[in-house]
Amino acid sequence: MDLRFVDRNSCQDVKELDRSVKNRFNWAWLEEKDCNGDFLSDYIRKMPEAGVAWCISCQGKIVYGSTGKKVFHVHAKNSTHGKARRATKCSQSLPAIIATTKKWKTAQRNPQKLPKHFHTVLLKIFKISLKL
Image (cartoon, rainbow, N blue to C red; front, side, top):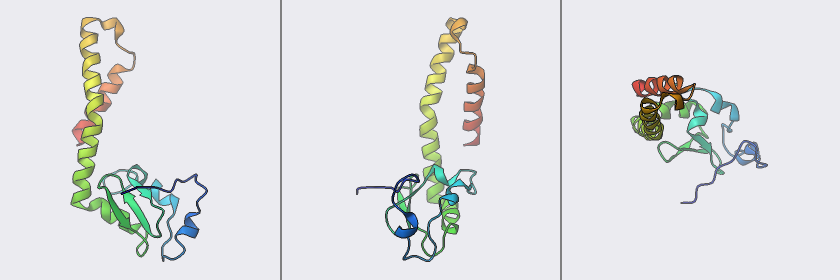
């Protein structure tokens, strides 16, 4: 399946694309947060089909043409989306933890090589992992 998305800055007119559906796509929807505290723009992409978007987390289509932005918030509560979301967040943070661990070991051997912001980054990583 060839996935193509409509970019906010593209010349393709979303209103023209969605002219056949009741609720036309609005880029402002993506600036809202869902029930999980994530911005819709983190995982929702507009597809070049009338009334259809794509969830990057679940790898599935979301049809918003009849219900509008409400369907994105309902989708975010879906258990399948929740599992995919957690898996994505864990796998994305793993390289950062590994890199941090390597820096920590280097710092223990040679404290002068420790970056000034290292402690702040380390705290942020642990806060993120505690939320998961």
